Amino acid sequence: MSQYILIADDDPLLRAILEHKLEGAGYTVKSVEDGQAALDAAAAETPAVIVLDAMMPVMDGFEALRRFKQDARLAGIPIIMLTALKREADIVSALKLGAADYVAKPFNPDELVARLARLMSGLPGASA
Image 1 (cartoon, rainbow, N blue to C red):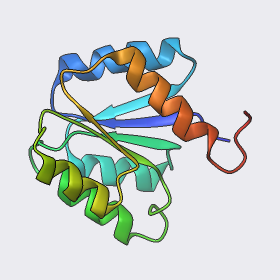
Image 2: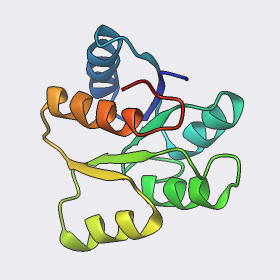
Image 3: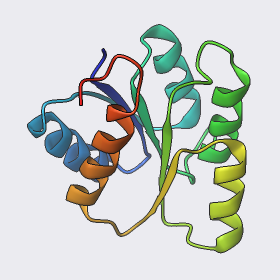
Image 4: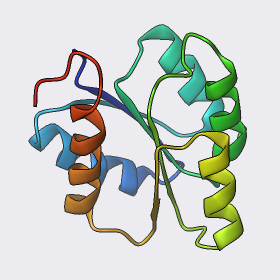
């Protein structure tokens, strides 16, 4: 079972923090800066989970989420939206599009690691 997590966020500092935290928890991490790059990276090597920001250049997270869920090869990958958008409409929209979870910024990195571990433990082939 892959322990590879893909992060898509346009903030380089946040990507560095998440990479450090997740690699310290034993995950393999790749980070990209926009939704199109996330789609390309996931098509090249399928991640176990994707952490996706909503507001990014080139392609925002909502459009990327929509495209992930429309692609038969990628539709089963759990996606956590990690974003500063906190309106109920944004949260509901992401969940309706197929997001597995929604975390609002600012966030606790330890909580995100716990949410990722929970998602990954429910994946086929995962060891509990």
